[in-house]
Length: 263
Image 1 (cartoon, helix red, strand yellow):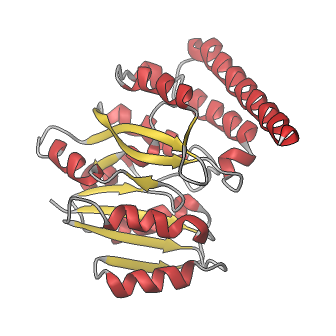
Image 2 (cartoon, one colour):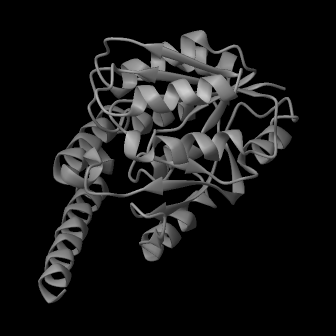
């Protein structure tokens, strides 16, 4: 059972090598890696060239893209694996991620899966453990109703059968944020996912990431996505989640500033 891992990249050379190593050092060996690069101007091309010389199962396509979703879609079109997933260039997989995922897909009824993920900083240290635990509480008790109100599925842990991905449709290129959330809402309409109670990956929160710099805009777009896929009576809960999300990021931002002043 071959797994295709798509990595969209644009100027993420600072973390790209760690990302690629986390994939090529997997305990499972039946996989391919497709990097869709939006003509990076940093050291990404040098890193990719070096990895191509070492790994024949790495394919790199350089292209003018409309953003992350467009790069993901381009990589998916080239994928030949039975199972597909995507990993942003600043994130990493846990060593047994692909082996664990492959084992679940040996059950024909499983169409897509998701698992647990840690949040790490730029140096790879785990942070925001309370946020992780809060998401895990919802992850373990999946319901489409809850997903319509809270984005609790971490994208980098999502894997799907290639045929199911094609059935659900490509990632929305018109969304700057939340394209993975919107995809999961569409996928959830077709089939309930299977939860893998194991840490599969690490999502990196750092100052250069879009979600860290533009969290209010991201939360607002998530609210718009929720409205598109739910009934009107969900609105009070959705607005509460939006307000709490903005407040949480404000508190975290203020705390960071105070820590920087003290240091």
